[in-house]
Image (cartoon, rainbow, N blue to C red):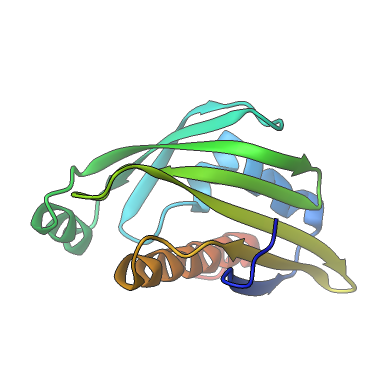
Length: 160
């Protein structure tokens, strides 16, 4: 499930793999950190099993994010769909995301694989993602995922 073109983000957290897995796979956990800065996330449906799905709504709430969405001709709220490929608690989570929100681009699936590795001080997280349809959108998803992982760190450590 890994390719040479995968993009990789790695982080270390002072929390157990079990805690991080719960934050990644429960409605309350997802709502607490999933959205990039300036957005909120609400979970509409979660069926955590291979073949199951996560449906959630992400809404722009920050002034800069609202302005960006409006300028790009995108709605302020976007419903998203992920389909789970692999669920191995608390070590691995793989899913595809339906990319159907880019104006002028036909919908397609985008794969993400998250691996949680216990360490003496917590957990190493590796997130592998496929590039998106062009360099600009690939850079956007990398920045968004990095921001989300920063949010996860703030949630875990209690630091703002």
